[in-house]
Image 1 (cartoon, rainbow, N blue to C red):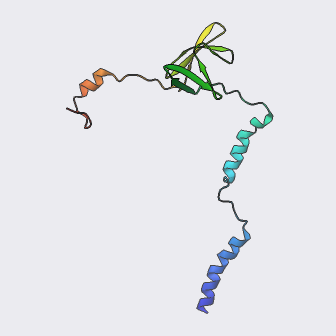
Image 2: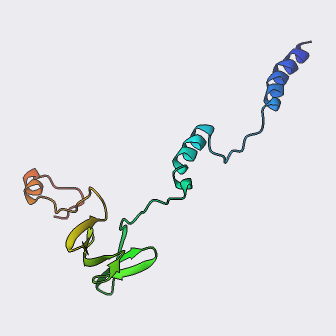
Image 3: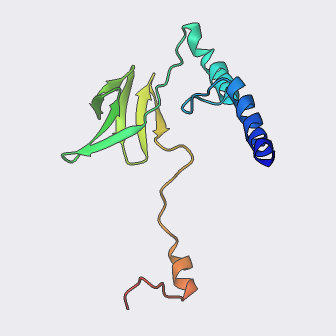
Length: 131
């Protein structure tokens, strides 16, 4: 009798689990699927958003190049009607309609040297500094 009771306890959850459909472990959860579908809806309208941001700069042979859509552009060349004036590690300057504009590669990030006064004022040696 006791064995039958234990078997019944284990069989009840198994029967309930058998009623549920099997779930694909690689599928997105339903909450994320609906969010992905909502964000993809504007793209499905047929109008692709223009993404003209410059994201990559390459330095080769002493010259700087902008890489966009798999092609290298050097200083003096044109990208979508804008002439490249200058290329640095942080930004690209483009001339368009007689005006020069700066296109940063990393928005909100600027490379600056550390302040000398702050390092000298601390007076504490770092463990990796050599005497």
